Length: 395
Image (tube, rainbow, N blue to C red):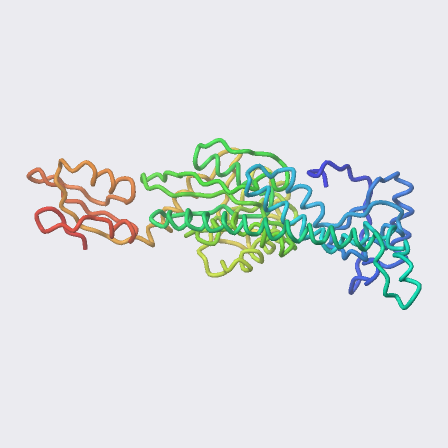
């Protein structure tokens, strides 16, 4: 709510077996919310759940104030942070799909107006202005949805081609709950200035940069939109092009705010979204970030005991980042093949290729020929020139 620019003045919590069909919380709780809102002079009531159009209508009538649900708040924050044409389209599409079933309530005051004299005889007369306006708005909304989906499909196809074009590089994607510190970590790893804000969903546009490991090998790493629990399915669908980086990455770096009291819940929420994207079997590395902000050591040790393989870093203080690089390098080495080459000493292009894309294990100069033993990714090894015994041999 603070990210959306609102000030929270009160909170009501309810636990019940199943939501009330009419008001989600039941009439008694509606009256309790109304009394508290009046006492605190609230302007709006926000529900941390998705509500049906009918529930919103009944709640607004019951509490006497504007009622917003979880998705509406998320969409408002998304709209604030959308920068590129792609993210703006994605947000607009999600907003329209959210609003379409809710259009009826905007024209109820006109639906009571008689539709003409035919309405007095068998109900076969012309429809009233409210229904005409409703149908017109729905048609406009549907046309816009079709148009935007077509545009996003083109962007999606282009994005897929771009991501697949990077198949010759080892790729990693930073994923995690919103505000876990992914952008700060991205800056530490790549040295590139990125937008860093202590707000939810400050990153909506996926950004990819080059990360050079200690050995000199290069990794293409992407910062992605933050996830959140109960992320609406239509939002995941709208942001499919943005999440393409996650789907095709070789390694997912799951960044967790270790100082958050519900860090375990955040891990579960992100895992659920990743599974829905078809990433359940993808190589993942859990990274506990913001270690400098951990205050409850007992709570953290419980979290740590449940995830003993997680790495600990503080992107803010640059602690543990080198160890993270070493672990990523080890994961990369596990995907490499070993080659044994004889390279002319003057072949600077091939030597540079090996240095940039592989890990040189041994190098010996004999009679103007380098004997080089190195490890390369399979796709890089396949690019080595077909040489005979005098120029080079790959094994």
